[in-house]
Image (cartoon, rainbow, N blue to C red):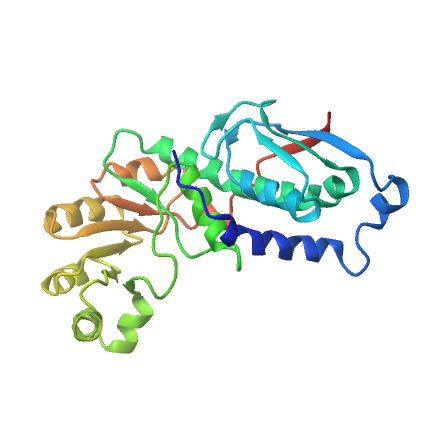
Amino acid sequence: MIAPLPDVLIEPIVRLALAEDLGRAGDITSAACIEADARMFAVFRARREGYVSGLACARLAFAALDPSAHFEAEAADGDHVAPGAVLARVEANARALLSGERTALNLLGRMSGIATLTGAYVAAIAGTRARIIDTRKTTPGLRALEKYAVRCGGGDNHRFGLDDAVLIKDNHVAAAGGVGAALSRVRERVGHMVKIEVEVDGLHQLGEALEHRPDVIMLDNFSIADLRTAVRLVDGRAILEASGGVDLTTVGAIARTGVDLISVGALTHSAPVLDIGLDAD
């Protein structure tokens, strides 16, 4: 079971999307050709194989336009489904159903696409110790939904934002005057509950980083050979995250080096939408 996102977090996002679509005059097509009291039944179906994520977004899209709408999920977020699988059924005022259709499908398809791509990466590293994690390369305003979708595909989340963990990147190192200087200042200025990660660009920075005992070391664009060497040198003294140059053709070899985490920006910035249809029933 995947812990669901609370409706109070999802609903404002859904309402913004609906407002964008309805514009200044609402759905003039549905209002013009459908009786005001007509009811409609429809079914969400997956048109290709994938992982499901975002059913609550669809439910809330219809509920916002018709509080009497009935939404019955036939699948759960995190389920792996085959083409043709029924994901949910909805019964609502016909105008409301058709006005909310695109918002529901946009969010459900986007989140299920992220979950499906994540699932492919997770499958590619099966049998290793590594875990697939996301990044902050998310769609502005949709981070909570997209990171939830990663979890639905079997991945894990990196930090949510700038305020929940320290991540010293290469530009921080340059501005601070070096890996050691940056880590020393961080140690003096953040609370004991804050995790500290530092990015290193090569083995020459690894020893300096280890002297300051970071919780996590990001190995940025390391070769496979250098990843193996880093795993041996660190020997469990810090969590190791591999980053850069990761795709479905390389992730398996990266995982087999013994790193703990592999961060993949593509999970959220390049995932194709999962094709899902809403058909009148």
